[in-house]
Every structure is written in structure tokens, then in C-alpha cells.
Image (cartoon, rainbow, N blue to C red; front, top):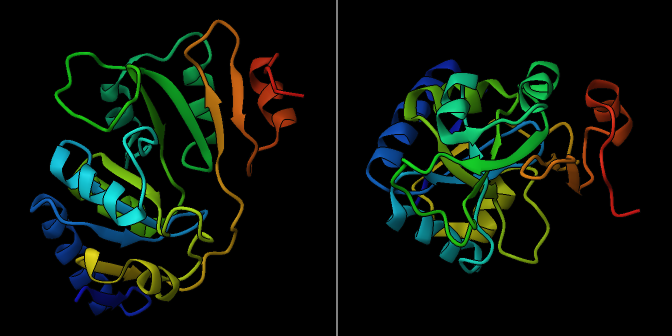
Length: 215
């Protein structure tokens, strides 16, 4: 059974982060809070762990998870090319609820699923998540729920859905904003919004000019 740590208690927070980082290094799954909803995460460079993550959610390889990072430097190591807009967007909105889809660094040995040579990267604005990510390095992280079910806004909700598939639950209370991250595709000449979310298109256009939408 996965162990839950109350991150509002300093001693449990420290112990929980240590145990979660160790679990990730062993190829196990952890649940962590983010600035949007709770996420289920695994080491991005352990293919078996990523497969376990997809299995726990009830997803296939056709829905690869995004990657969360604890630093901008870690993100740029994963990306082949930020394009003309990526750095400006990172400077304006990271850490925060903006996921950038970029061409992945072809030299990396990893398998997130059927990514078609891309990677979706985000740096979350949550102290527990950032502390864990700085310890583990990049993690494949998806919302902590079974596919088709509501996203978990508490560790308890995540545990009800994911149960024993997760080794460690980091409990930081109810998430303050359940709006998902905005997803922006930077792999084409014109940035395209793939999902509307916490950062409105008007704010993005204020930084980079034109953003294509499906409207």
C-alpha cells in the first residue's frame, strides 16, 4: 500500500520528499501536488515506469504523458529547439501553468509513448513539486486519476482512484486552482493552442503576437 505524507508537517514533508525521490529512482510511481491538480509521476528515463504510469491511468501509448521539470535548464536539455518564441514564453510564464510542446532532443534515450518526436514540458509553480523535481530530475507526470474520471484535487481523491499502484503520496492539501495548464504547440511556424487552460490566449499573444486557435 502506498504511504501518504502530510506535507504541511515539516518532518513529514522532508521524509516524504526523500521517500518519493527514492521511489522514483527505483522506477516506482508517486503522486505529487502541482499548481493545477495532483499528478501521478515516474522517472521520465525509465520506460518500464512510464508504462506503469500509463497502465495505472488506463491509457495507451497514443497518449504520452507530459514531462515536468524543476529548472529551466532541465527543460532545455530535453528540447531540440525552442524556436523563436519558447524562451520568451518561459521567461513570462514559468514556473506556472503553461505546457510547451517542442521537438525533443534526439540524443536522449527514453520512451514516453507515441510522441512523434516531440515532448510536452512544464515547470509547475508548487514548492513540493519543485523540491521533488530538483531531486529526481525530469518526471513523466499526468493527472492523478483513471482515464475518463475527474482529476484529483486532493491526495485522498488520487489514492481512491490509483490505490496500490502508487508507492508514495505527497499530500499538500486541496489544490487551489483546478484549471488545467494551457498547452501550446511550438513545433510549427505559428504557435498553436492545443488546450485552453489557466493562461488565456490574450496573455500569450501579449508576449509573442499571433497564436493560432481552433476558433
